[in-house]
Length: 336
Image 1 (spheres, one colour):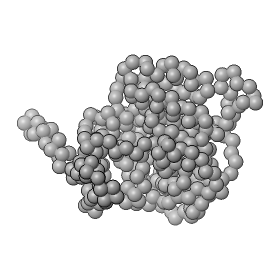
Image 2 (tube, one colour):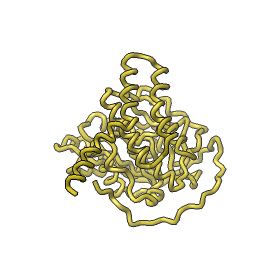
Image 3 (cartoon, helix red, strand yellow):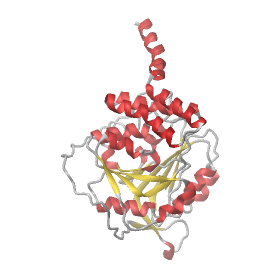
């Protein structure tokens, strides 16, 4: 599948050492004020220069829960772009109801794929900051405010990776005060950060250094078995462009951590191998990723977890990826 290309170029940033503190003093900010519907002046809403790109398929209640969490924010995003992949208009009534409270752009599309949908949404985003929440995640009520302050306090930071908590722990993400974080300086740091698409917050300007945002051949709904790690590929390419990335230790989004079935673990592992192969990360990174499921298994050595461990390692080994490609290579040889 051909990737979307950007004609915008950007002069590479000089690589410098920038002094990031181990904690940040938060400052009060007001981006702009906005009225929604017939709200009075007294109920004006504070708006952040942030676009949320939410791609969704087959979920209604989860989307409603997410929008509720956004509505509860101390500062609202400038826009929520909902890329709706559903064949039927199952979200129409829900979105009509929420548009009285939130700035929502509803875009129904005739294709499937999380990466393709996010690329579509990113191309429509108007704000200087972009995030890509999953349709089943939740935002603690101070998340947007704290992230906006962090971006303003440190203009040299291009990407912020929030932490992650379980939805049942969402009130744990409400702590104000010092925000601790670590720098992501290497590919190994990036894998240790365990980033997910839903906890990535990025400046729109840094996206212009890439020829495309998300690889449409990787991720849920892609036309390949590589069912995950599109966000890892995205961040690796940004890191290669010398983007400045930090991982937060305190401030978190709420999202489930269920690994799912052995089949899903297998496909996720295949996605990880594809990213390592595509970005030519080398033997060391390959072996670390291949063996990491063993360490995870010994933290909870249960029979089912052993099955998940084996499935993940099989996927990350690359054996099935290469087997999947074999018929295409044979077809090319026959046709030539």
